[in-house]
Image (cartoon, rainbow, N blue to C red):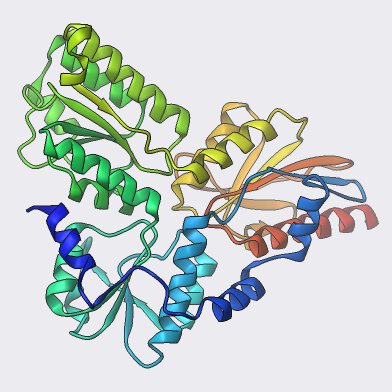
Length: 402
């Protein structure tokens, strides 16, 4: 399938919408009342520090809603206002935040049901409105919805679209796209659908396995078994790794994406003559500015003297997980939570570990004076951060009274 030609054709369709519907001012007021926080703005204005009693809150200097997320949510709100009586569906969560997605449900926006691990688009009828989330949707889903005669509202983040353009370039010159990402993540599923040949690597460990195969060969069956769910159909590691290009899921750890790119570049120079590098390796900068800013801010925050770290974001939010990883690597007591509801009575907290497991930790909030570092993922509204801070302050105030 010529995915580039299809996208071009879709974008000229009267059923395709990638801009707002003229309700920007009204929606902006609604979003501000539902998701913004006067307290968080006060902390920003005070050099990102809040002092209350024996608690010091130190906020990261970049956190929370990014432009792409804010745009996607605003477009979803505009869609509901523009189509007040039509059935509206969403192919995935609009963003990875439970409170925002619950708000979509309250606005009678339905989610495509998943049966046996596959989306059931049979519920969608001609004329229905379907929103593509900030992570994008696969080209196959777009084609199906277009053929059904749906009105498509595309909120895909432009940074994600930039990665799609990159893998299109790889495909044009018959390069295999090495995608740094999680093969199950909606964004990576969409990106790989626009690629030709591709291989998805989760981390440096998997990347090193691949480059060792490039340099030294190996067990072909073992390779294909290892990446059975993370490569294009008919992938042949003995042929399809001769020419590679780097791409990424925009929410992955920036430093690791860069390391993987440099690793493949060095490998191709070693495998082939350095003068032939351009015939075997391509790299374009597809690291999202917002992801980079939040990771850089987190790196600055963990250099402060902190007693503990709170990372706020959806448990299925990849960029939030990367922020948590930074704290864990520096051995700071750190808790990834998705809302203040995870802060339980009896000085207990339910939080997500890096391995994905939920854990309840006892006595997590120390006595006496404490400095708490706080950041949030790009899909987290300021109001959620405020609620977490309020809960911490209440608990400490109660402890002092006792």
